Length: 329
Ligand SMILES: NCc1[nH]cc(CCC(=O)O)c1CC(=O)O
Ligand SMILES: [Mg+2]
Image (tube, rainbow, N blue to C red; front, side, top):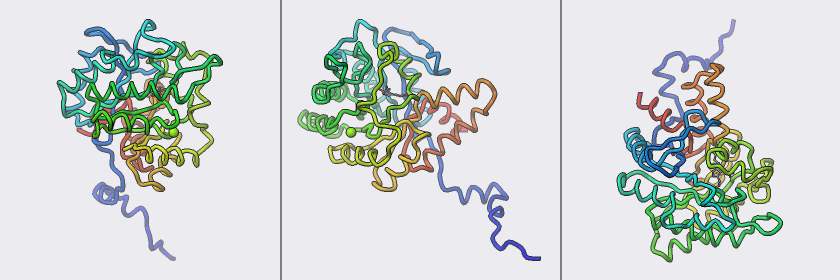
């Protein structure tokens, strides 16, 4: 009779030894909370395809910000939702100093100076067609023309006080152009979180419902600027370019279906790496939770821990508050 010399189960026997050998941990410090902002006062609107997520007016945003502070969540990511009267072909509203995003940033910075505020730089909430940039007569998104507008948008966010600017548009060269302008205008410490490896994903559907760009986009797609889900070498090149152009943090998006990309970026480049657990990932989990098919707390925490294991330094997730509450116990 021979016995196994190595019994892997020994260390799993008790909670104390399981804790001692645990390699990765999720904490509130890892979480970034995305929020949708609308006009009005004391106004909240549910997003039907994202149960539990609401679009809120700035006064309610401030109430939630207090909650984020209490939970120890370091940063909120803002997504403005504007009416059709604010949308145009040239997306001028994107850089309106008194636009919804800019006002939301100012209010948060005034009341919660310690909370990180990250803004989305992309034109889709402000274009009549729902594309992230300016289009030509054929509907093709023009790169360099779009970058000029993105620079103005980014500058208006920095001027409002945003500490982190997050270009999510996938135009070439926009990180360098934005960095240049920020430096020239004295915003030398404004951090850039680049959505570097952003894939043309079908998992963004509920987000496009939330910001009201789905209808405008119609049958359109973003294949000629967002990345092909088949590629990973290309993701490394995208990340390298953004780092060279002055990005402080890089992001992979979506999250769970792209953890291989997160791992490659972290292992090969060793830079601050973030992942976005996007709206579709949230929606499909919530659907299963609401049906009683999966257990919410444990599946949510397992899904977030998976990002840490893959090498992410932080996660943008609609579960941020729920997860932080659980972590607090
Ligand atoms: N620039 C748009 C933007 N910024 C964040 C998301 C998606 C976020 C999510 O699905 O949760 C998108 C959608 C898109 O590219 O169409
Ligand atoms: Mg790029």
